[in-house]
Image (tube, helix red, strand yellow):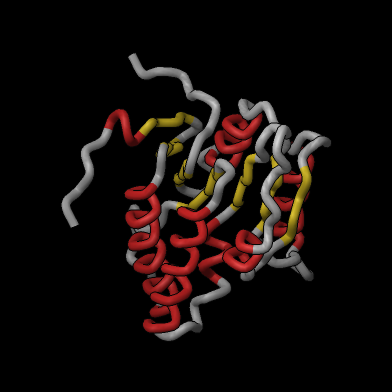
Length: 192
C-alpha cells in the first residue's frame, strides 16, 4: 500500500501529460501545508487566445483566496532569488510553481550554451530555496515524434531538465489519468 502524501518539504516535482490532473494534485499537496502559499505563474498573458485565457481562469478559480500569486513568466529564476524568506516565528511559506513547460517555452531561442546556463541557474536556485517548493512540469514525448525542430527541442530540453530536477527532489509525483503515483516509492533511478 502506498502512503498518503505528507506535508511538502524540500523540492517536490509533479509531472504528467496535459489534462492529467497534475496542477490539481500540486494544489492538493500545497493545501496540506499549514503556512502561506505563494503561487508563481510562469505563463504568458493570453492575448487573443481564448482557450489559453480560459485555462488561466480555471487555474485562478481553483486557488484558495488566501494564496498569493506572483506572475513571473520567463523570469522564474530571478523571481525565486528575489524572494524574501518568511520571518522568524512565522510558518514558512510554500512556493507552488506552475508550470515548467511554459517557462521553458520562453527560452527555446536560447543557444545550447545559453540554455545550459539558464537551466543550471534554475536548478541551483531551487536547491538554495529555504522554503518548500512544489514544481509542476509537463510530460512530453510519450508518443508522437514532434514534426518540427522546435517541438523536438522542447521535448529534449524538457526531458533532460525533468531528469535533473527529479534527481534533486525530495518527492516526485507522476499524475496520469487523474491518478497520482509516487515515483520515489515506486521507481528505481535510471543510471545517467
